[in-house]
Length: 520
Image (cartoon, one colour):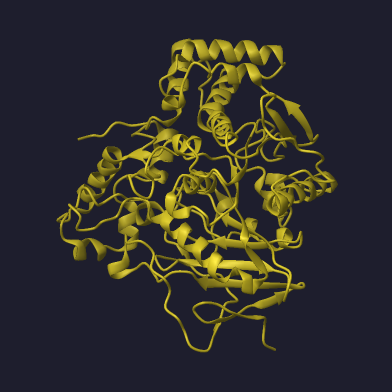
């Protein structure tokens, strides 16, 4: 029996009916970026004759593996990996007339790992809330974010933003084709977590993305640490040094096997290893590049100036995003050094004192690791998020949240960890034992997932995340109203305000300054 079919700009695709939903997997939105197209902007896919079967996930982008000492089991990516990865997936109810809001998901993973086929990103539960869900793969690591234009003297004109250009190409595909799947191309919400959140905010600052989306949800990520060209070129030099190629021989560079491309130079995996072992520099990895074209200027500065003046924003973080490794018995000087690594350019001694005093007042934990982790969380996540909200609310309503739901995993030391909201945003918190252990399961978790999905989909539908299940959600204005999402869900004005005020003496340059200096 034939599955549902849709005619796209490039040909007819056939999916599967799954529990009353039409599901299409592995639809190409660009040509395979291989051979002479490696490190090039994405090109429109070739048209095809007949009907293309789109019932299985495509390969995800080739990526590095994490060493066994790093437990990333829940984020394991199933299936094959390949440079040929520019495909997307669609979940939708059948429809011949009604056009539903589109939710366009960008997965996280430090711009270095992950994929749309990860079970946690199954779009069926959100789609049942009355939206069309699109999830995408994009080029990552040195395949998608390596600046080579400068160091190859234009032989390979890669800006280092090719992965973002992939995301823009996928949004253009949505604009041109999503109506056939029941989606409204004039009501598109982009959302993503971690590096997906970086991507959301980078797209808000990119002229090429303007008009392709109308609402944005940035979860635990702001692209505030985009690289100036000199820093991006420095990473390109490291890459060329490792592969020992003539920098002007484009054909030779494009012939390097993908695994060697990923393992050369700097990467997210090596940065994480350096942080854990103390050997090497822990922040030399690929990210957005301020190239003057795709990304003309800093993300926060561009958004403040109105680069997405027509976009309604929702943004937030988890309470305990970052864990700072503080050895038992650390001296005050050692603690200050650890804090300085996470928060560049601050007076770490004063910041530690202010956080300790504030946390004492609100009866929060005050151990050295707790203090360092709280400062790290705010430096890398919460304060950039607040600055983002402050920038965008000049132009459109903005909404803020903090997730306080505590993971049941571990020995009780873990809290509202980075990514803890993902299982509730997608309703996949209890799909198997590993997910249930990480996110929680049972009636309370199911109720929270339903409420979070209501809020996220209501925002996509109307630009307001208020719902019957989560309650009224006021915009983030002078009173800094914030939806606290957890075991108890409620609106709180100016949460953790004394910690936030501690950052008032530092402008965005502290949050945006690249965490390394060029080597050459």
